[in-house]
Image (cartoon, rainbow, N blue to C red):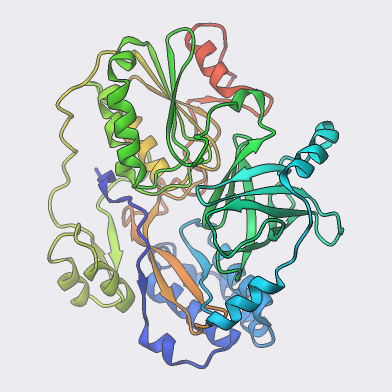
Length: 483
């Protein structure tokens, strides 16, 4: 059985001498990308993409487009190639580097819409019945914005900066420009702390209060659906929270598996340990959790472990790594891998190598396992990725765990992201993020990426309050839908 201790979402920028020596152009970025997909990405080898006529035709078409693409178009061309794989762990990231003088100019030239928070809230209140889900007051740990329909009608929506710790920003400056995408998402431009642009390929809203953008998540402060009122932490929307409901139910909200939140969750569990162990139902709400480290929720094990075990879900076998210069460089930086892994990779260029040669053993049971809660429920949706999915797969081995909601996003077959530069640095600054580990050499057999992890009890969009549904299910008031 494969171990779920290796699903930490780790970003380690690597420098490729070959890429750095190329001339800077979109064509050079594309050629570097196409080569690195072949050299570094284990799925390419396991699923025989080199035999795929459609993929080869796509590469030829996009290579031609890259020859004439400008900076804005280049990002789209490169993303069209990685999008072929439908793997959230394979992505193009922008990290432009600009001189102080350019940064100062961008700050001075930033668009300003002269609206304050009071004016935005009043405009939102006047249109309560016709608001788009993205309209409202949003926040992160660093800033707050008001998202409104663009009064200048050049875009569908604009995010107006309201305040925060970003010292280079002034109230009224435009933090993001958004357009609706087909299927309910939002594409556009998001401006970073230094005012450089990031192209947003398709942000989505989960649980009505979490806007997942590329590289960051915003929490909604106003207006909030009744079922989600008081759920998010008021200062940081990604911090876990605990609520005690009626009928012996507790809800632990986990909007992110980012490792720094492990200490926060562990502190909450210790503070409420006695009350949690008295109750019959514990609900872990993962909706919109884009991943991080599977260790973040390790402290929940005493509440869901059981002596009886279910069969594992998904592909089984040893995890494997593709030997390439980039991957060798990545694993040289990782202290958690078996010590001889790099030697084995260096001895097998271009081949798949077991991540570990040691026998796989399940993690030891926690010192304490609580008899209550009798029921442990997890609520998921398509925003749950990576480490969130690893948590689900591990927890579902226990017989008191039930998964509710809709299928997860499917980013679990290939894990542990490394990041490498493409040909260009400077003001475009494009990088490739890719998974370094395949869950097993038998993929795509039994793979979960195409479907996500399917729930035991589906909850459709017609249910306004999924958590109330879960409480009602265990109280016998809700009947599970026909499968």
